[in-house]
Length: 599
Image (cartoon, rainbow, N blue to C red; front, top):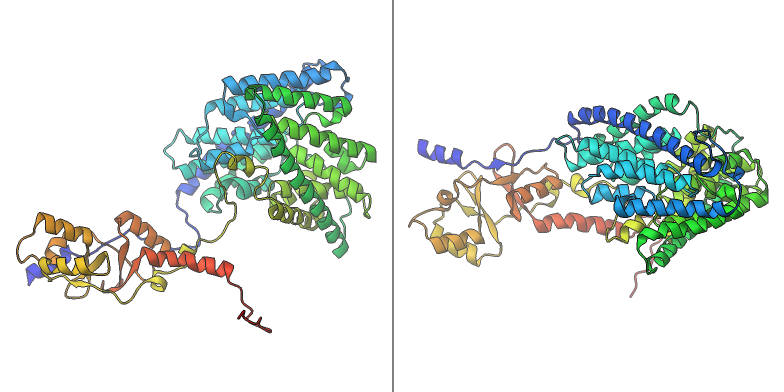
């Protein structure tokens, strides 16, 4: 009897590591990542300061002949041959840097950051961290109609990624620190920590977990603490206007959002049409930024204020100190040169141009609406940003933090949601993800609760199980397993507890190798480690256990007695997905008259 008890103890099933069920998954490494993010956030803030100063320095040297960092408006430049030559030279320099430095510096930064996260294991090279801000400063400083935010997102991300690569971290943890650096850089440029965190959530993280959210917030907070020392305190574009009140105001904001969404759709289509034209050129892509520079220079001859970052234009749109003709001209010229330059593969960001274009659209429509044109310009800025980038929360909070006008938040949210609705209905992909899709990668940006985390094993397991007794002779088991309906059968001891799984592969091995006459299943399986589930386990744990055990069928046991109560197969797990599809597809009307079914 003692020997039998020892055999049963030896054959007790090995439990797969249980996961503690909770609302969120978190462990003490969260604190370590947050501490790292504070350092990365500081680095991102200082990188933003260096980039801004470098842009202003190059701008002043190229256009004003001054070796300083005093901000001067582009409208004050002297128009002439140099207006065309400077952007061409800048494009040539950027093309050479990309060709002989790193091709990853091409573009506006956010798609490249997304690609590094999803494809590159969140690893960025030191070359990107150095060359991206320099190339962007050259591009913008020589007249490129871009913003500094895309490059600093890429640069801040590179700082976070490089820092993470000095430690033993997983790809998911590196992603967290990469995005923390990106959020810190954006916070440093604009002073918008909440919008930067929302941008991380809506565009870069592809998850909502404490492991990523808390460190990203830590980095943004570090950057905003440094910002008064580096850039000064207060919002970048201080603005306050009486917001549109009541239903009509929300409706008017939504109308501007719809218009901005249509313009964003048109801009996205035109951008990639321009890219297709550049792709057909019979010359190396290194020369494309210089060709794009020709268009930029011609645009500068028409309207110099369309060149460069254009923060002064944003301020004038909000202040309402512009004429109708000037706003329309800036809208047309800025859109044209931005599309051509961006599609040429030069280096620069999209947020500032989108603010100008959206602001111009809102300002012009606002002339037909009650209230100040500056307020409607702010609404248009938020809507254009939210619709083009498919980030409505970021767009609304970004406008609020840029201006400090929190009273406008309801109207801004209505506008960004309307713009977002238009672009997701009319475009398969956003301006950011289309570039990645053209490189062969598909991105889904919808968040949802994993149905496998909601479903319990008890809800999907098969309770009527064909099993084999542990004392069955192997010779007889060969016949049963070989002729049976299933590929594997749980083997139970006298108490009904599983001691192993007899599979067809086992049967083939026993048949070819031979076993001792009189051997039983319990004897030959007693050394096998058996993964089992409990009825209260979630289905995602069942998937993990299947992968770990390399088995398509897992026994489900009572946690108290260890007795077999069911079995879970791959087919059972697939039915969870089938239920989700059915819930999305099938429509019903629980109340009211029902439609007559088709004959």
